[in-house]
Length: 223
Length: 223
DNA sequence: TTTTTATCGATAAATTTTTCTCGATTACAT
DNA sequence: ATGTAATCGAGAAAAATTTATCGATAAAAA
Ligand SMILES: NC(=O)c1ccc[n+]([C@@H]2O[C@H](COP(=O)([O-])OP(=O)(O)OC[C@H]3O[C@@H](n4cnc5c(N)ncnc54)[C@H](O)[C@@H]3O)[C@@H](O)[C@H]2O)c1
Ligand SMILES: NC(=O)c1ccc[n+]([C@@H]2O[C@H](COP(=O)([O-])OP(=O)(O)OC[C@H]3O[C@@H](n4cnc5c(N)ncnc54)[C@H](O)[C@@H]3O)[C@@H](O)[C@H]2O)c1
Image (cartoon, rainbow over all chains, first blue to last red):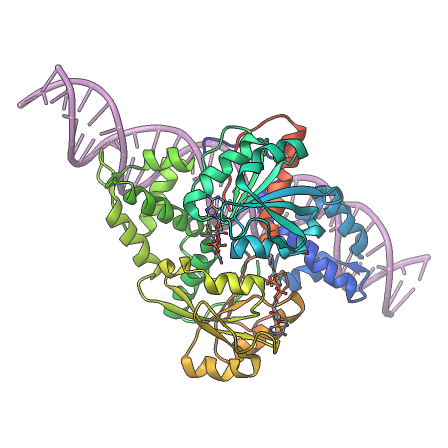
C-alpha cells in the first residue's frame, strides 16, 4: 500500500463497531440493561476477547463478572464515531440507488443526513424526494462551498463518477462515499470510500460455490 | 471465531478480485490488451506483489517483463467465481432498496439475476419492476423449492428480516444476501452475507474525523 | 465469611495478511 | 549476440489481526 494513513484503530474493528451498535440497540429495546462479551459473542458469533478489545477502542471499561451497561456502551460508540453532531452531505445521481439513500432515514442514527441532491437529467431536476429537492449539477460546486459541505455521495452511472467527484472536490468535499463501481482519482487529502455491492455478492457466491463442492460448512459472515 | 469454514482463499483477496475485474474491464475497453501488476498497482493504489498473489489465486500466470493479457485475466476471474453460469435469486421486500436491486442490470456480469420478488404489502403485490412481478409472501417457500433457488436477498425492514430468512431457508435457500441491519439466526449450512451500508459510512466518517483532527493524510480506501 | 464462578483487562501466542527479497525470464536496446 | 531493465513467481520477513492465557475482581452461592 503506497498511501497509508497513520491509523491507530484497526479497520476490522471500525467495521465491527456499527454491528455491535445495532445489536446493542435492539438488545436495549428488548429490555436488557447489562451485557457481557460472552453474551454478545454468542449472538454475533465472534470471540469474546475480540469484542472486548474492539469495545475498549471506544474507551469503555467493563466490570468483571458483570459486563457492560448497554446504555453506556452505546454512548461510548456514538461518542467514538462522533454521531452526535450531524454530518450534512450532498448526493449526485438521483436514480434508483440515489433515491433509496435520500429517502432512507436510518443513517440519521449515524449522524448522517443528505441535504441536497444533484442530477443532470431535466426529467428529475426540480422534483423532491424525501424532502430533498433535486438541483441541477451546475449548482453543485458553488453551493457546496457556500454550505461548507464535506461529504459527498456518488450514485451516478459509472462513467460519470469521476466527473461528479471532481465537482465535489472543487466545492471542498473531502470525503466521498462512492456507490459506482468505478475507480475515482482524487488529490491527496480526499478520502474515497468505495461501496461496491458486487464485492459482497462475489464473496457470497464464492462461499456458496465452495459449500456446494466440499460438503456443508457453517453460516455467518460479515460484510 | 467459532464457526470458521475451511477457506483457503483469503477473504481480503476475495474482496479485491471484483475490483480488479471492473478495472480490467474498463482497461480493455480503453484499447489496452496487456497489463502488468505495476501498472494496476499505480491505478488502484495497491502493492504489485499483492496483486500478483491475488491474481494467482484464480490460477492465472503472467509473463515476466510483459505482464498479463487482460482478456485472459478477465476469463480467469470469471471462471474462478463461476460467473459464467447464472445464479437465480429471490428477493423479499420490494421497497426502495429492493426495487433498486431488481432494476439493476449490473449484477448480470457476476452471474446474478433476481427472478422473483416478494412483499407483504397489497399495494405492491402484482406490480412489475424490471420485468419481475411482485408476488405475495405466501408463495415464497413453495416456489423457492420448486424452482430450486439457492440465493435470497433480504430488503425488508429490519424487524422482518428474520421472518424472511426463515421462509427462504424453508424453501431451500442456502445463501442470504442481507441488506437489513439486523442479526439473522440461521441453521448450519446457510451462509449469510450482511451488506450493512452503515459500516462503510462509519469507516468514512471516522477517517474524516481523524483527518480533520490530525492534519491531512492520504486518500484511497476500499469498501 | 469463604468458596466458587463468571468476566474483565492485559499480555502473549498463533494466525493471517501484507510486504519484501531474490533468482529467473523475457523484451528491447545496443 | 549481449547487456540492461522490467516483471514474474516463490518463498521469507514483517506487520496486522485474531485467539488464547492468566491473574484480578466482583457477584452469587455455600
Ligand atoms: N441500483 C443498484 O442496485 C446498484 C447496485 C450496485 C451498484 N449500483 C451503482 O450505483 C450507481 C447508480 O445506479 P442506479 O441503479 O441508481 O442508476 P440509475 O440509472 O437509476 O440512476 C443514475 C442517475 O444518475 C443520473 N446521471 C447520469 N449522468 C449523470 C451525470 N453526469 N451527472 C449527474 N447525474 C447523472 C441519471 O440522470 C440518473 O438519475 C451506478 O454506478 C451503479 O453501477 C447500483
Ligand atoms: N434505502 C436505503 O438506502 C437503505 C440503506 C441501508 C439499509 N437499508 C435497509 O434495507 C432495508 C429496506 O430498506 P428500504 O429503504 O427499501 O425500505 P422500504 O420501507 O422502502 O421497503 C421495505 C419493503 O418491505 C416490505 N415489507 C415490510 N414488511 C415485510 C414483511 N414482513 N415481509 C415482506 N416484505 C415486507 C414493505 O412492504 C416494503 O415494500 C431496510 O432493512 C433498511 O434498513 C436501506
